[in-house]
Amino acid sequence: MVSPNAGSKMMIQSYKHNGQLHRIWKNSVVLKGTESIIIGANDRTKVIESDGHSWMTREPAICYFDAKHWFNIIGMLRDDGIHYYCNLSSPFVYDEGAESLKYIDYDLDVKVFPDMTFNLLDEDEYEENKVLMKYPEEIHHILYQQLEVLIHWIRQGKGPFSPGFVDDWYEMYLTYH
Image (cartoon, rainbow, N blue to C red):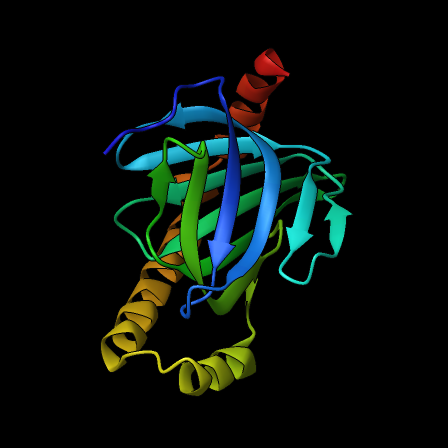
């Protein structure tokens, strides 16, 4: 698998299980690109929803994608600390020709606050789409197993939740921006 070069630009595209485009982040900078991990950053970037509606992100964000795990993690730098938004999703695929990172969004999200407390979100949306899009039972088991891994990372301060991770990558982003 090909990976993007640090300093290059990429689009982030999320899809739904049925193949429908869900959301696009237009302009992110690659901070680290390997076959197993891509770390990107953006600030006030345009986001386009599947219905064509667009909006701008409000703060700098460090985006962590892992080819082995069924989640991705967005660390948003806000005045009151780092807030995280975690999507339960397929592992990423990098499309070199389109300069885009792609994944399937599986509805469940975890919102993590600066004090590392967290909430599981969108369980109702997950249950609805699980039936509507016919998620295989295997996907259901993988997602809930990966949710346990994600919660372990949060509680143990691993990966993007480790002290300094988001701040250090944000400093790297500033060298490109």
